[in-house]
Length: 495
Image (cartoon, rainbow, N blue to C red; front, side):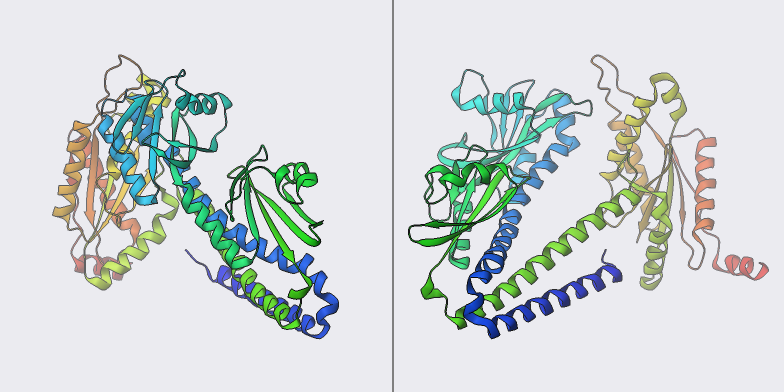
């Protein structure tokens, strides 16, 4: 959600950036040739390098983030924990991730079974003796959370792929396997070539051992063998940022390197400048273009950074840390928004207050860890039956609250009945070998919003309905309809 304060900040930042770089361009116009070399070392190369870094990080970090989300998905953890009883679901999941991200391949390797899952099915069982599988042993033993590995695609040995390997482990830290996706090296090569064409600089991607993994002109090798960089290779690899000027082949060579922390590679941008290219009009044009470029890049970075930080803070403030559902602190603003929306559209709004039956007995008998797991299980089962427009809250302890805009009482009751039956079909599956499944049921109180009433009135009716469901034997749905509109008006007048 964008805020006025954030928008004002971005507008001020844009004005400062554009005003500042415009002033620099005007000074360059007045001084021209006297400041040519200074502009190259302090402006042209840094600006073009920053733009290249921003673009490349975008192209690499999206699949890195997608791989991280795969590793954080409880579906994979649950599937591996249950013994991989339905491998076709794992392949279907990988296929879905491949389609959403545009990756050329996705994969999952199980530490327990050694299976190599692919969108097309189980390709093989990994063996430590197989040279093609040594990457997995190396990654497992390294303890690293993520790595990028250049290798042949197991599904297509004729294709060289950049694999993003992510460590998969359960809540206790036990290693479950590796998952991730693959990028076509030809795609990254095209990105670097486009950057060289756009910025007039040679671009290298170098791994931690100094090997040139990719380059914009197709030449590989190592930093040691790159023109003019042999004496600087150790310095470039040891430092997170460098900005150097050296002489090579009779002309000045400007080098800027930046380590991409999330990837583990180092980006090296090399630019040359000859005396024939120092014409005043070219310098002015380059400065103007660079000013616009860096303004856009910094604004985009600022917007992304602010948006990411704001979203992270909002998520922390609005989300229950155990279940991942909304917490009750955000109920009131959401209720006000949805009730106003339903009034405008003349649509119903129903509210369900749900409570896990005999939850205290679960905690007393099985312990609070199992109690927490049951809450997470119920949260997942509830979420499977919700529309995107239905906010679901962990109301406190074992209670859940559900808002259903556009649903009549009868429609809402049918949906709650489906949820109730679903919990019968899918009891909580214990992670303890040999332990029996734990039956879980819900009691629900349901009511409908009466236009003009406060949320507290609606909550009170839902709570009364929930109490009735408990008194009637639990594992059922009780409805407490809203009073007639005139009744509410009479109450307001009396107050």
